[in-house]
Image (cartoon, rainbow over all chains, first blue to last red; front, side):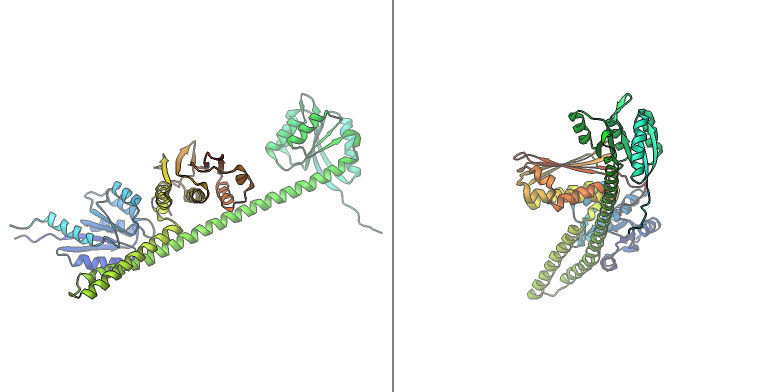
Length: 132
Length: 363
């Protein structure tokens, strides 16, 4: 039986409090590996290019540039990762811009963060269908 | 006995006159009155124009009739280059309507050639007036710079506080919310404990919403993260929701990367305009146009309310209107407000379209 390939996740958020909790929550999902984290836009881009994750969890507001710029850059990579925008900016204009730039999901950080776990779990299942 | 000797006043004159004898007589009157004269005398229009372009003069003295042109044309040429240099008409008698036309056009004074003793007094008064005008202009420029600086500091402070509130306080609350949610999924079957934790979670939610609202009121992150159009779009929707006044936006500015200070000015003027609509207009609908026209950003806000009284605009008692105008002027723009009773009010802001440096990131 071949071992299940793990889902590689990269977490980008300028708040250490939020990063720590997200990583804790994601680490509890089976077959998930946290391949990196970043708190600044520039570090996020270089980190993601190096770690080549399957999924990026991405905040918008960050020092030294915004998550929107990270999204734009990351989505030009081939293969490009799935990007889950997780933000406290809940105006529809953000959702619209992020979706235009190729974001796969747009979630409100405080009321919808648990969806991240569901999405990561679903991604793992889709990549590695259950063995007969 | 007063022993002080009055030093002669240096006076650089550009003199438009074709009669040398008239210049000579008037010059000697000025010299006797204590002026140290350096006069450039010309008769032709072209020569006058050349002297104006090449030299610096304290005053222009001109006869009315000149060969092929006249004093009003001389005044027009002078005002194209300098708004403060006095212009004294030194002439024989003129028809009353011509004299009135000269005053209307803005000559500084009018001295008759047969009353030359009045010329030095007229010159002294004109110079005093010029100096006062220059000081006034300088003082206005300084006030404008100060206002611009205060405006900019205020905006920086608001941005800083908004970021602190949103990023620090908001993120900490989000962390708490994540923890509360984590706890909720692991609680034992204790109804009271579950109810209290849910209530705590709801309280955290409402506090997060409050924090977001405070930060957005201070400075909407949309303006920095997504740009002017998104911010105006959001403000339009927010205004409609808050006031019930129908507000429609039309724009062709979607892809422009506008310099941060211009974007901020347009956005703040837009906010102030909407505040005025809500407070005074008694409108039921507002049409907003944000467009690029001939290298300028043009924002037009037209409401269907009671219509502003033009006296309200010209009296400028409203600090809000004054602030809007100043904000536009500082960036080389202008603001026009028009309206008529029962026909609504229209505010048009026009600013040069200063684009961000290539590759620059929004603030």
